[in-house]
Length: 272
Image (cartoon, rainbow, N blue to C red; front, side, top):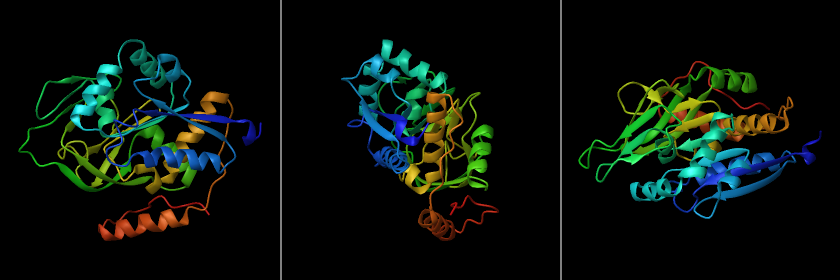
């Protein structure tokens, strides 16, 4: 089966409500890198006008950050059959990248600095709590080593190197993980809570992170993993993506490592 016969549908969670920090760049990166390889790509907004049937059609899911008020609006809408469809997609291995507010929605609950607790979908075993208005936000550059075992293995197989992610965090909430696996170990920055050294979460094929920037343009190999995983699941074939020359992205990552004075033993580089 040639790439021209393959289609990929990106489900974009509430694009008008949950794109506070430019995380639409993640959607664009997946879309472009799939199109450059000859795949047909459709971007489907999953918002108040969508149905559970729409959610069931997507092959990869992207969710961004939001303010507390917007999160409340989303959670009032993402109920019933739509919530069940989202749970089914993630439980059955549909890959996705969920940033900042999105992991909080997928967790058990989020307690804002002001207002009532926002109940989540309970897909990820984590809770998020904002310590209060007078607490400093977690803001700044972020570098993590991917430690989620299966994802780290897959990314190392794709790139030939230990996977490190570069990003930017900006969040008031602090996340504590239950039995869910952390996405990675903080090398630079604060991560989930600034205390236990964890960042994000990884469950089935869902990547949850506080890393903005957006994440995927800075770490394009993760976008390729999402595309490859989605296509393999959809078509039940051993699909392997042709690598790109990502040397410019690799140089930008190296520049950031040097700027932050982070010395990495074997950072992920581009295949050329």
